[in-house]
Amino acid sequence: MARNIRGFLFFAQSDPEEQAELLSFVYEKLRKTELAQSLFFFNMDDLSPMERQMLLERHLISRQLARGDGVRGVALAPDESLALMINEEDHLPHPKPEQRFTVT
Picture 1: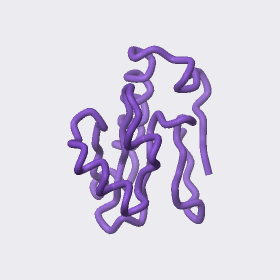
Picture 2: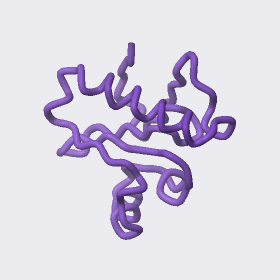
Picture 3: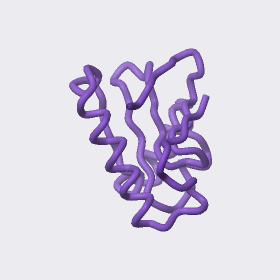
């Protein structure tokens, strides 16, 4: 499942400033949800190659997110029941399609 956010260019069409704006937008929206207290939010630039590989092996992020460049992030639930990738190919690709959510 993937979601794109109206008013933002697709990742491949956006520059780093626009990518950072989308990452910040999603982060601020997530902070206002009831999930906020239980989510860990990571900027991919802050993760080591080993940390990225671990998330990839646990099927929490895609290969594209793990190895890509640009301003990207991931929000994770401690029990790994939710992994929300930000700024992959789509704005919000979701590796676990059985979970549904809305960002407003």
